[in-house]
Amino acid sequence: MVEIKELVKRYPSGQEALKSVSLTLKENTVMALIGPSGAGKSTLIRCINRLVEPTSGSIMINGVNVCDLGKKELRLRRRKIGMIFQEYALVDRLTVMENVLSGQLGYVGFWPSTLRRFPQEVVTQAYTLLERVGLSDFVDNRADQLSGGQRQRVGIARALIQNPELLLVDEPTASLDPKTSRQVMRLIVELVQERNLQCIINIHDVVLAKQFAQRIVGLQDGRIVFEGQSADLDVNV
Ligand code: ADP
Ligand code: ADP
Image 1 (tube, rainbow, N blue to C red):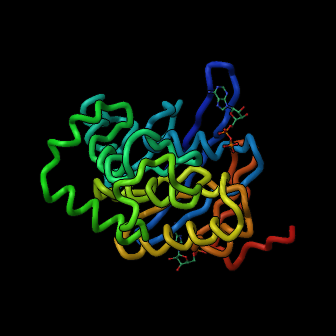
Image 2 (image 1 turned 90 degrees about the horizontal axis):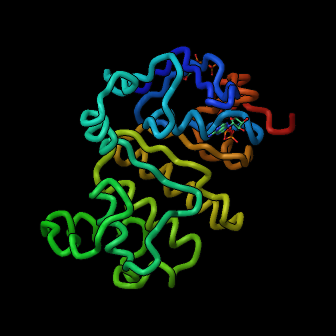
């Protein structure tokens, strides 16, 4: 379970991006963060893995307050948080397989030769994941030979290789056409359920959010203005 209490983020510029945000997320659930540009969605996602340092408040993930963690503990904790990015953040000159394995290292800027030292079980797991996301025919292709939808599937497999408990997804469909967007969203929702994950998706497309997420949180000007089941969200407002 993720429990966020009275989270405040004030940037050094003085901008208050989050003004006392509290929310709870359970297992097996996709929560969509919606709201206009500048509402604080990215800031909230980034506070959860402390890419952005919260000013005050608490973020409990399965009983651990990530705001209290020192550097080393934070690094270990981040392994249990999978990130999927808008622009995929793949390494173009590496293969699909190498990109997925890079998720096991927990960071992107690594030296490719380290990939050869991966245990066979990790490589097998990567194959299984690539099969699951429909890319088994592309394992040895370079990442820059893939379509946008395929690249996002690699991003999904990379986020899942370290068996995270929580998946943070930042605008996964921003660079995709509507049909591919729906396929990617469906895949994420299926994987969250198959693997009993908790998932927060930052998404500006309200229709997609309503169609695929179970819970919706609407942010505006750093505050929660809507929280509920997606069925309760009126997309015509
Ligand atoms: P509302 O939709 O009006 O906010 P509730 O918060 O009572 O109503 O939630 C309705 C249902 O959603 C309940 O079955 C509850 O268990 C479930 N639920 C509530 N909060 C969450 C959450 N953060 N994640 C997943 N399910 C939730
Ligand atoms: P969203 O993801 O909903 O578009 P953001 O979290 O990116 O919103 O931004 C929320 C507010 O915080 C905006 O007013 C934005 O300008 C400001 N902001 C975001 N990042 C920074 C930063 N690094 N420094 C100062 N202000 C920032």
